[in-house]
Length: 445
Image (spheres, rainbow, N blue to C red):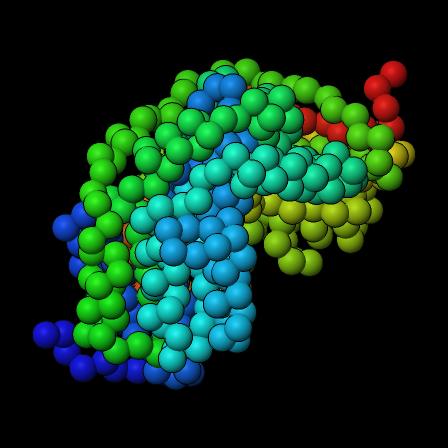
């Protein structure tokens, strides 16, 4: 029997000490392979339930681009016991919220519910894990929905696929890493019921998933409910995840795209970084992106926005979707700069090179590092303060690193990053190692 639940909390630091967290983590694995993480927190009467399946855009076969995202939509179209809209009706009728999303290396689903409806949320997730309603009508309908989503979010929006859809074909060579994860219309329209059922059978097995339950819960009771609703879902073979590694670039790669809706030019720069599984070598790059681009005092913001006025927007992040801790190898550090028409792209690149070189040769003052890490830690602790933020963070840590406990350890790991490690990371962002994607407004000449 687990010990009585204690209040899970973000701890206020003693004077002179950095803030941290001490959220309780309980875990077990069902006979069918489903990994379960529970984290009780009685501070508010809500609970978050999240299910992460180890299948994402990189898992799509050639000729089926966008299929992981299409299947995410299908998972809301009915299940073993529920009709097409009943999942939404049950959640929203109890005052809850729900959603799902497709990422490079996983697909997730979640509900946030009043704690009195915890069992209902577990039943709903178990029911669609048991059997989703794969029908021709649902497939045809959701293909049309996804196509319309692509029109709205990419084709008819300025900078719609920039840079997350447009950089990979330049940066990477292998199909798994380089293809359009949102989907090609021809690939989507040629999807069959057999494709959908096979995708479900292969990737939506209990042993290929992590379930997290966070919030106002009784560990013993939720454990019993998980066994009741998920325990008799038949085990299926879990696909071995292939390595998606590919050789590092040895010379600069360049490409240009035209955006008829963009009001001004932009440029993206990308560099491959070390395997995110090794946080010792990876976190300095996460800190480096912040040093370069986050806040008015960051290197590139201060230089290009406030001094030179050679840019109108700058951002930097790890991973194609902007979350540095939810992607596996290979993954890039991305810098994105939007600039006035009168500023040549080569001038933008030269300024970025100068600032990176200044950091790589001149080093990083300890005060600047401390300020950056404090800001990152504060933002992270705010994110995991919500039950949903904590449930999703624990799920991805458990899925990709087998350590949901990293939810508490990450602030300390960030504080262990040294100025020398950030400087060394900056030294690897060379011209020969980078990919440059230039976006020009208007149609192609």
